[in-house]
Length: 487
Ligand SMILES: Cc1ncc(COP(=O)(O)O)c(C=O)c1O
Image (tube, rainbow, N blue to C red; front, top):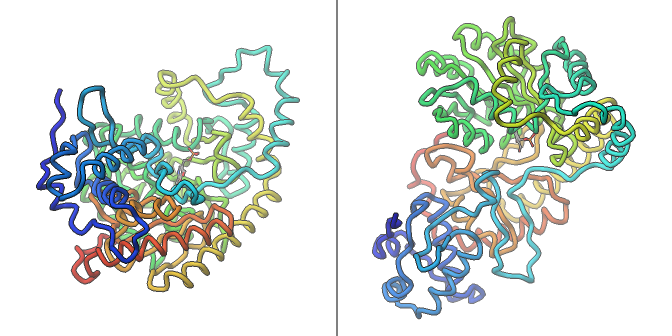
């Protein structure tokens, strides 16, 4: 089927003031044009799947040479924003690395000599203990080799270790309540598939983790935003209770432990209230504890599930943020009926988590305190470096850091987040724009800045972002004329 062609007049109008300002001179015209088009793609103003105007039409409408437009399209093609079939026009796409993780942008080749700092990921490299854990796993492997090695529940050793950790944290847990998954993302997808139906509503914090939003949408359900208020504890519990009643949502997805992207943590009373909302409204709550070990300024209160009386709270955990994403080990803690039902739906997707990775995870979780404390210390230093660089170079940006997690949720002086994310690669930084963390185009005035990178890289990144800001700010409407904020 032929792709819908974007009108040249529409594109020229939406591009607005895209031309490089003569004073800077550094950015070639084709780069500035590509940047303008990238921004419109990220903003959703150029629909995915549409074909761009022909090079000739665009060149003539913008009074540019054809070569300039050809170079611009070539650049977009190379970055994955334009897909071409032989003989057909290029159609607009998001680079494949952005789609699955929802937070990645490719490294553009604009300035090959510029080192690129990737701030689209809030994930750390492995601590040294991970290598040791795999060596220990290899030693243990021979005892598993005589079996078929595929246990969709997970190996008993790991399930026992995970259950013991919950019990220590004030949530008595039996190993039969644990299902080991291929990371928390897999766990979420399994749960959303089982617990929702197309058209049903799922309450989410707003902003929240982008791949959870996508997973909810992928199963045909509709995310309903619950605004977070960073200036208070974050969660508006009365608002959650009335949203649960008014929308008749059967499911909520929440991250009360050092939430991604805000870093906020819900207190003890709030947790008890959440459990009571779930009970009173007969709503299941999926509590994502991926960040629970990253409390930088506080120890998190006991798990929300410890305040529940029945099966209404399901907990998801992960090795990714605490130890290493490359393990691909996560889990679900739920009552046995839910675990049994999950087993049934898992079989059509995968048959279990690799034994080696589970053994390594069990080794790491057997004695986690030392490595976790060192990890938190490392992250604290990185967060301070990022905050210092921000206050030096971007003093008019506003940030209220949460007590943990891996990122800052920064308020910009105007609605410019997508523009900034589109421009920053030209200055050596890739960024995830605020709207990725919300629905319906919210959060153009916010950007997530992770502090997972080294202090030197974070300083470099902020210099690049500050340079991109100089380019973007003059083209951004004043904050006063911006649409009302959702948070
Ligand atoms: C809140 C949250 N949940 C889940 C995940 C996915 O974790 P995993 O690597 O265990 O799939 C992430 C990763 O960024 C996350 O931030």
